[in-house]
Image (cartoon, rainbow, N blue to C red; front, side, top):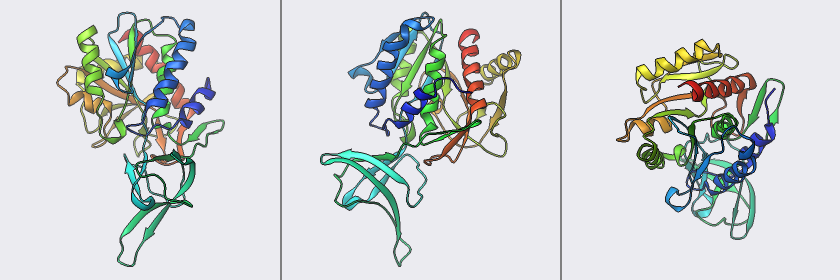
Length: 311
């Protein structure tokens, strides 16, 4: 059973493709302001024009920060209703898309057209030309069963959801709701710099969603990534693994050669941050039918709560 599925369902329904995360940030701010007095520690909120559409919560005297990106994949409408990818959505004919332009709300579907020369175009089906530059995202559809949640944008609204669940119990720490992760990064550098300069904070946990693979399966616990495109410092990784084992939290170790996250962006900065990606595995990645096991989500919450206390 998963606590507060209504929050997760709401998060997955808010449009927020890379570069357009303002509505997600505004929702999180309202949620925090509504619930912060019920939490163990009332956080200080940092946001505004100098943070673009990002948000930082600081609790007590922070030593470790959770990074959770708020943006999603999607599409930009180009010329004559052609679609240009934001991030890496899978192109599946007939996918339902929604958005809004100067003439009103849009509900459409993706159409893949291949001409006689084998050239492929991706367009949307609509009864008029949509304003160029309009963002379209997957139509919300949230499905909950006994064992699984299936929905668009569990990557990474589920990471945001986990961070907000952990916020209830944090005594000392920070939560960073970052932007642009799906389309090359862009905010983690200045957000990390803020925490480093103001609090001398140098430890990060990346609350994001990974993939079901040959080595990482549904129901085997939260994945602790030993490496992907980036490589965390081994002494920091070992500390996290030992804490997880000591607490008897169910987890599985991930080792990949590719893929990146806010952790990669931190490693590519000039900041001396240790970081580790920790997330539940999902199937049907970057489609409207992303699927995550509920047990893995609960283990993810347990591990983050434990690490924010003892790391």
